[in-house]
Image (cartoon, rainbow, N blue to C red):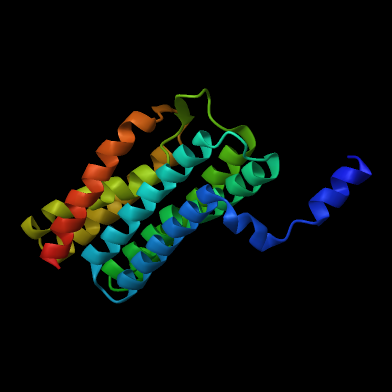
Length: 213
């Protein structure tokens, strides 16, 4: 690396990258999942699911925004990729782990599952950061954001089960999803054309869960 390149990089402050629209979008998604974690801890599970669904939406949106910017620098792309990965582990690993623990009333039985969710998320994201996708349309293993989309959908049926039965059902489903997150299977990447379907799903489920709560 040339001395001029090193000097140019040393002039960047950390806050400089907050002016980047995709990074602002990513941080908004982090705020959504942070609010979701708060509602997990306070036992307001439908509000928690609203928060994490919006974090999925912002996670998809930051990539769309990034691809639309023609003059985005390499440094912005590199910082954005790292920021996105770190936020993903909060939104799609830490959140579901805390959700499971809280919904299980912090019973120690749920503790191993919660750890496995976080551990699997860390392993998957580390692998993805090194090897990336198989191709532009295909992941290896199930992407983590699918977990919380599936989790939110399952809660439509919560009222048809006893608390004990549904808590064990959710536990089992989250463990099964963990297996698919790490499995050497090819899964389809939902592209930009699916974004508006996600918007509709998020809005509909947000209204529904707000009404239930």
